[in-house]
Image 1 (cartoon, one colour):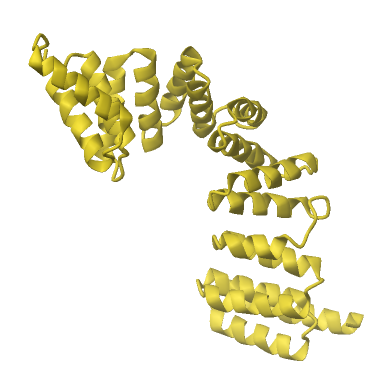
Image 2: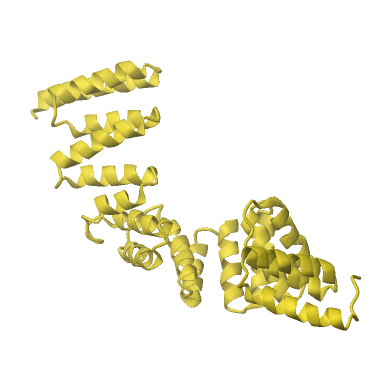
Length: 304
């Protein structure tokens, strides 16, 4: 495309952008389509039209334009990265991975972050770990680096590599000193490392920053139970059960144990039975119910 032609195309793109800014979306779309017909080599026009469709929530139209563009320009790194980022924003994880796996980790480091996050969302934690670590090793200075450390910590928690999870959580702390989710991650990691005092300190920092997040209440209950603070364990586990639409059998068992320790036998029995209703093989609840049956044969406890 010659310089004069480029200048003309740019002026028309700017006109279409003004139409869009003024709320004249149809005019902008028509102008972009005409531009594409007359100047099919103008990549920016395709990007702008796709972006306009996306803002209008016409996702299928945006995707079709970018898919066709990539088909015609499969070696164009800019087009592939733009399309991959679009797919990422739409939560199309498999498609994101397919589009961006074309790049080597050193070639486009940001692609490794998008691929890692996509694998994480697909619960493919080992593949997520590899991509996130490739991104971090690239040394690229970007706003995504702090998120990469957070997701590496989460990934290693899911892989039960708690020492590595702690290492990456500490890396993230450089960027997120007052981010409640980071303190929650520390609490979870310390819980699994049986560093209970540290877990309590971290969950208390989390509660100061955000008491409304259901996962915070869930973990507060579990950590206080482990630390022997049964009053607080009961408080947070009860709140979690009351407010959550999805309660695992594990949580019912935890509350049952809490009631056992506070000598509220009937309440304990109710929650162990609930745990078994949803998971008949729940070991904690099964053992507790057996113990309670023996206790009932020789009743010495009260409901305090």
